[in-house]
Image (cartoon, rainbow, N blue to C red; front, side):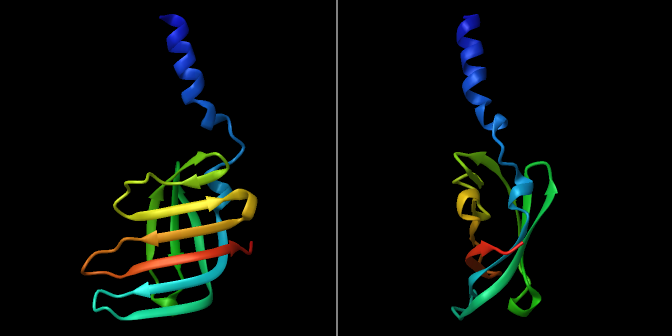
Length: 125
């Protein structure tokens, strides 16, 4: 039983040993941003700048710039296979940072009272 327990600890703690940390995803990104309002209106911005900041242990905050509606969302993230992402069933949406590509994809789910944001871009600093 002790060997099984040690084996489980070893396999579940592998992601803790990774060199990728939430701080690696922090920075500014440039890319395509689209905003879908609850009214059905759609706005798209090419070369939009968004920021990612660390707001807590394993928490990253995604923020659009004020010119495109200033939307922010905080995601609980973890490292897996060279990416920093949140849980698949997160009701806030999807956050995926791929270290090898320095790329970010975010989709906020929004609600009837808010707007849905879609962003895909590359890290610029």
